[in-house]
Image (cartoon, one colour):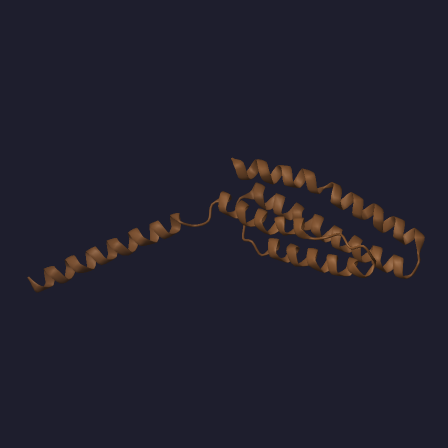
Length: 141
């Protein structure tokens, strides 16, 4: 009888372990929670202020780089959401590079480089609306 009790106890423990594993697996992050994380981090860019002088462009670029790093650190499994995350990362990278190029061109008084940097910044920022719209569509499904 002692052996039967031990067998039953191991059977119950094994069944409990399997059940807990399945429950924990089911509690993994879904697309909505991943969307919310991306949107929460991306919304930090709303609070960034446009600098009034050249010295603030580098700080703004650094802040955008920080947001980019935070978005990149979010683990995403959904392929559509991953694509939007990649596009968002690209846009942040382009904005940051353009801001730095604009600061450098202004410091060196290179009008051609300044115009090029402004054009690149406008092009990078113009992508934001489409990326945000796609994220909103994905995150409301």
